[in-house]
Image (cartoon, rainbow, N blue to C red):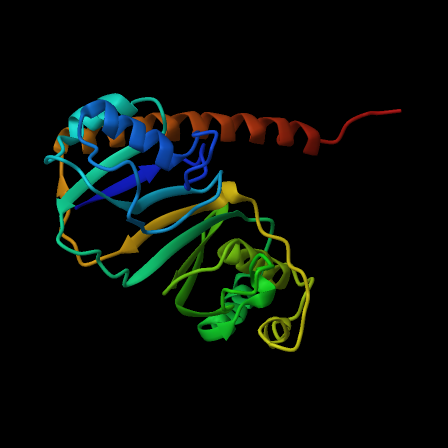
Length: 265
């Protein structure tokens, strides 16, 4: 078995689907094209993400018939928004020690201290039934453990880092919405206590998927990296960063125009 460290830019959902336009399907096609794939299935993965969610440190465990050359895989994935950054041959499926998600929330004048105070209530083991997508099968427990939440801000956005053992569907994005409600003072800090009460039910919408990135699904594995692939990964994201800065400047120009006093009928 091999574990592959996978990054992607959010244009696909993760899990394989019949339409085959997902991270797993595109990756498996690339591995097959390289002649590496022994069995056409993912044995285990670090996290299943929705379309719009990016990842820096997800992973898949697959059966390969030989040691992969990452630059060869890169050539098959180039331009598709998926990168295999590292690999390691393993004898058994590794235990995920924690999962680290980060959300980038545009700063709309939120009270950061209130958000931090509210986030402390989420740390620990709780029922997240109000902060996850409803499980109609009722087979999955809503009890989850969050190890830490860190909130920082700059001029443009708030960074919310959520670290936990495992997460329910839409859990991080609903946590972000709840914290934003407290930060905008639409809800008091103790509203979080109500959301965690097993006898209380209230719907909370998820924040947009595009703001979420899986930073790491931490396993005790020392990945083997390829310097060429890492260099190309950096160059491609530097190019994307430059485009985003230009777009930011254009957006600010448009808004600055609208904020200036004007004569109008």
